[in-house]
Every structure is written in structure tokens, then in C-alpha cells.
Length: 139
Image 1 (spheres, rainbow, N blue to C red):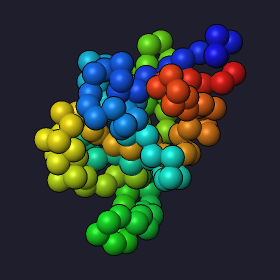
Image 2 (cartoon, one colour):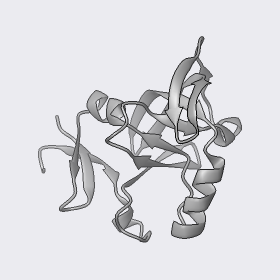
Image 3 (cartoon, rainbow, N blue to C red):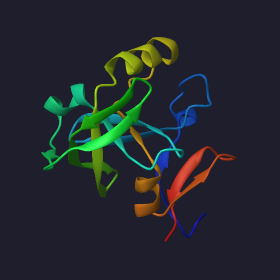
Image 4 (cartoon, rainbow, N blue to C red):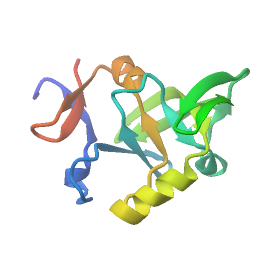
């Protein structure tokens, strides 16, 4: 791993419980953005209630997105965020996840803002190392 630059850290280093939620934390300015890593999803998702507080660009058009409540049309946004001195840009589906994220917050004490799917992981050559509870981009 020493030839690779680590840019994500899971919740073990942050002290959240239970330890089986893989959380990646990024920043946009002073705003911390916590994303659950969902390797089973090809899309990235941002919760609609955080958008007024961060910089983003709404993209034209809509896409069909599957949620627990069924299929819905969603808008997309391009969002930039940082980890250390690296900036990442990705496209996110905009979904109202406030109720679900509030329940996770009550249960787990972590405030989530979205989900990172396999699209982001592939775009950034991310390796998930569950033995060491880290994620890093393989160069």
C-alpha cells in the first residue's frame, strides 16, 4: 500500500459504532461531507437537504432512480469535494434521504450526506481494504 496514496478512511478511525459501516469523509471548504460507501450501487447519491449548504452544479435532464419506495425521476448534480490536498469531482443523483439518514444518525451517531457508489470508486481507482479498514487510490 505504500506506493499508493491513501485518501479515504473508514469509520474505525473516526470512532463511530458499529464498526461495520464504511464511511468516507470529505470536505468542501469547512463543510464536512460523510458518505457511506455502497459497492452494490453504480450511482453516487447526494441527499437533497445538503445542497443549499454546498457548491454544486445541477445538470440538465432527469434519470430514473430506484429507491426502497420505488422508481422516481431524479435530477443530477456535479459536486467537488476535497480530502487533504486532492479534489474529487463526481456526478450525484439528488435524492431525499433525510428520513433514512436521520434514522442512521440516531442509531449510529454519524451524519450522512450521501452515498458513494462503484462509479466513484472506479473513476478514482479506489481499493477497499477491509482488513485495515482503509480505502486508497491505486496509482
